[in-house]
Image (tube, rainbow, N blue to C red):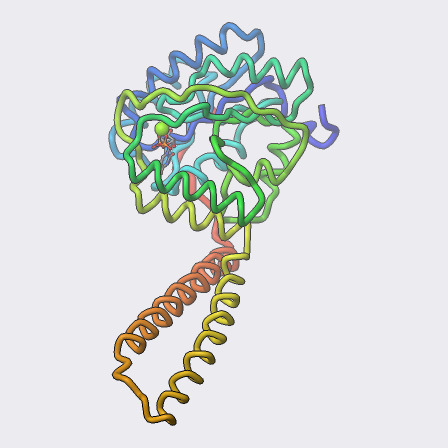
Amino acid sequence: MMPDDHNRSTIDLSIVIPVFNEAEGILDTLDVTMRVLQEISMSHEVIIVDDGSTDGTWESLEGVAYQDQRVKLIRLSRNFGKEAAILAGLEHCRGEGVVVMDGDLQYPPELIKEMVRLWKEEGYRVVHGVKESRQKESVSRGFFARMFYALMATLSGYDLRGGTDYKLLDRSVVKHYIELPEKVRFFRGLIPWLGFRNISVPFFPANRREGRSGWSLFSLVRLGVRAICSFSSIPMQVVTILGTFMFVASLVLGLQTLYMKLSGRAVAGFATVIILLLFIGSILMVSLGLIGQYLSMIYEEVKGRPSFVIDRTRNI
Ligand code: UDP
Ligand code: MG
């Protein structure tokens, strides 16, 4: 045990599951997970964080928590997003090891056994669940996901391809994660950033059986932009590079135009003007948007609001 967490760690293993409107599937997930945990001879708890569900998820979970003390519930006061829900779970779990898992059975709970083995027997402090294939998804989603991972890898140097939020963390890693001061978090990127001895275990994600993905394409794109911006400031520098490039180009074009004018060969250059106008205009707008993105993230941090607000808990 680490010397500085003496008042925790009365439990070997915690499972943290963020859920948002998973009424149809969560009891199944819990069932399968509990069965897997039974096969591992370790004391355990399952912390389910209800991220402001509106479909009866909380009510059905309350019934289970009433009968089983190992099932612990946290209800956030509204939908704060998966990142906040994960953080809430990590802050309240007491395990020496913690597994973060989705509530829709897309990540096979059986993998927990292998994760625990790598952690306990081989001394890894972080075990990443890595997707061997992508689950069934729409073409546009697959396209944006691939684009995001490619951009993320080139701009920030973190290759997260296949990366998921399915991870086992040692208590020491959880402690550092909780203590990070950031409000806008990207779990999947921050854990590799923290470092520590880690290993990846591949798995094949299942397709969603119940309910539907709580993410719209728009919210995924937004998450992607935030993730990239919080791990790299290169996009902001790209603006400067583009601006310089445009300045040189406009100098050349300007000289050429002047020469044409002076030599009396000025042609009707509407096309050039319009193209330039559109080009510069769009670059300006994109650049402003980018700066706005960074500003909004700084603003978010400066306000210092908590990442989530808890409404009530069970068994905690
Ligand atoms: N989730 C959440 N808050 C949200 C959206 C999703 O806690 O605002 C949970 C959801 O219930 C699930 C996990 O995060 O347990 C992954 O979500 P989902 O399956 O919708 O994402 P995908 O698997 O499509 O990436
Ligand atoms: Mg899912």
